[in-house]
Length: 614
Image (cartoon, rainbow, N blue to C red; front, top):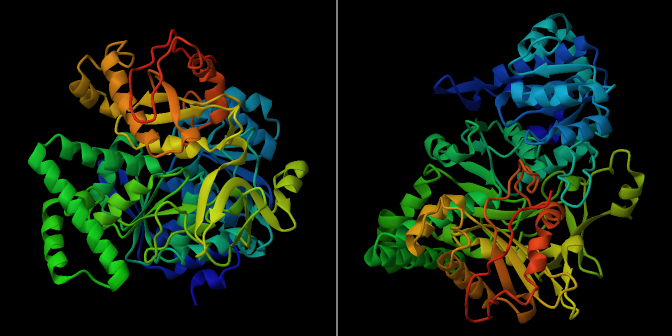
């Protein structure tokens, strides 16, 4: 029987794992080298943090917030608070001071545990408006009345004997954590997730990925995100190793290659960048190398299909595969360290073409579906049964149904109990035991779910056609040149799009089109416009007429977390983008701009002003 089947709460699971496991719990980079943390050391740090919070006066059920990036101390704070009987409120490290204020005030947090000076400065700006916030703790840079994490742990030594009783007093029906939604469709809402919800999702993880003491999970997504925390709980439950990134997004692929994890979770952007880079390298290496690359990937795809259909490829295909692997495919796997057994893509749609490419190279990337209100995961493809373009079948015991209007409904022990201090939203979301997700989808005969759009994001053109913009945007992002795409067209005769160039590909784009990538007018040049127009035209060929992008504009710069256009998991805040850039889309419906035909591309679309309205 797995330990998670014995534990009924997260504190029980954590403390038992710390006592039971003798392997390495985590690896992290510190002082110029990768360091190891044993399960026993993890348990000691968690207990010390719990005792320190008890010494501060934290009572069972009170809220403790964590404002930090993904690093080992996050686990000490998270599980320490839970073992003290508190409720954890995760706060995205990229949140603005105002966003932090909203979460801390709404949740009534009594303690906030920050990462460093940068996060402490946010709290300093808003602390005077948070009367219920009694204490501030910091992993580092503590000064004044801010308590360092080490000092907190030392102060709790005499209370260590109280940790076990506090942890054992927690019940499965108690609230474990209140993560706040990313705010893509309005003000963030606090989701009440119980210990039972979290452990149910932990057990569901075993249906998708097998972990053990020999496994290692690379962590770089925010631990404030429900999926990352669920993965950590499952990894600890199974005695797997967690590998923490160094904290630099530009170096994340280097960290992965160096640490060689067996498992990885990411938003689609990471896989899109690797796919783009691999294809770009092949295209720029000459005709012979490009043909070799395409032949090798085709061999990998044929071998995968043969294995799925007949159990193994033919002797001739196996021979070709060995050659293809030596020349090309193994190099793609090496980008992930060469030991990757399974990767999971979530948070946003990913193109089936990208998943097929990685499968051909021997990198299994599964697309799944879930939401904070469902703890983390509801459906997922399986390593032995993948249907590209779908998010897989429900993970038992989750149930999925499709309402009459196409909305995806979810039921199961992982579904939350409601929104904190928002009964109206709870009643409209939880109806007769079913979670109304707000997503639109279809179930095929084998139970695989395909997400077709979001109810609040569906565009209805003036001709009455319903269009899901996210799928079109995902197709446009398949291009190596495009980092973000936003489609407009609600109550309009046709669709238009605003496009942002990938900053990592500007040099290559300049080499292809001429011009200076650092020049102010580079994005608006005719040559760049023609190149992007060809991309849009190619995407249009794959779409029904009502879904085709007739006009587009290239917007200089990039969407970012800092400007509030993206969530910390890199999802588009559509309302913010519409507010800031909607006037540019309006210009595309004027008479002085060129159009992109369904089968041909004629010219770029210069606009008078690209400045966002804030």
